[in-house]
Image (cartoon, rainbow, N blue to C red; front, top):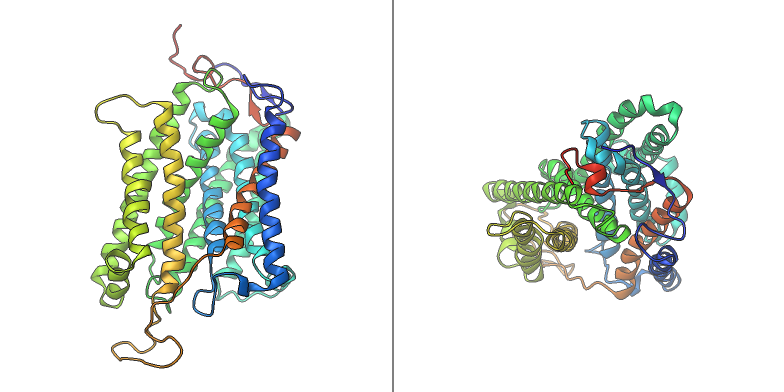
Length: 405
């Protein structure tokens, strides 16, 4: 493997025209601006313009925010493979991995803050802590992740600190596992909702983070580099790794639903999601399981042909779509199923007791969530322009230790 030369992404990308950077920057900045305008619209008119109500208090912005936060942890996986586990081919991408992780987390947290109605309420969350609440823990997990990943990047980019890179990478690896566990336990600790209250959410969210983060990482690399600068060796290795992560998500999803079916207290919500939940059932089977799970597995582990770059890119896009559907089912579906206030008793009143809660996402909600991707993209591109983040050459000749002419 040749010595790695890092460059800033200025007015070019390897193999692309000189206007590539600014064209992509304008595109992602436009998405971010649309998200900010949507947040202003909801702030100006009030949250009655959204689809959220007294029953569904977490809406589409939370779906996008949780997806981005979970993906941020997984995006750091490439750096961990290189620094912590000693997988040499991944080391040139460690800097980009760290920067992408911080950018995705910032994009997700920005959506949450902008959806507060009054963003100044964040001050309360940062100064008053109830340590019996997982949300208080997550304040430290998210800010700590940014600080630790920033130090990790410093050890990789400052030559005098290179000897500490492995130790910093180990701390970042353990911290991101804690972060994703904490995010999953937001739902695992909610005993009032029949669709939550399960410890399996912790490993499920860790598997989801690996899958979502790898899918986004592959699409970003495919956007930055042409095939001659980003060889098949590394592309196919990450593609097969994505397939393993997708299989892990499917496995823990099966465990989640089988254990819930076994427990009598969760059987009703399981029938709601799996059989008679309308849009939630359709999203689960068609989008999450088939489009976001089984189809990517078929693309990444083909039976009758070889793996191709197009298959990997298509699988990555499907994983992202399926992942958004999965988070939607967890967050919105879990709230839509009626609360069981008195187990074993019938409850009727004028306040929607025992009734499936309705929710229709509004356009501003969706645009705010999509704006989180734009904010993450702007931060990522700004970092790639300001710092030596991108490897100059990821071709097979530079990366593959067994390459022959």
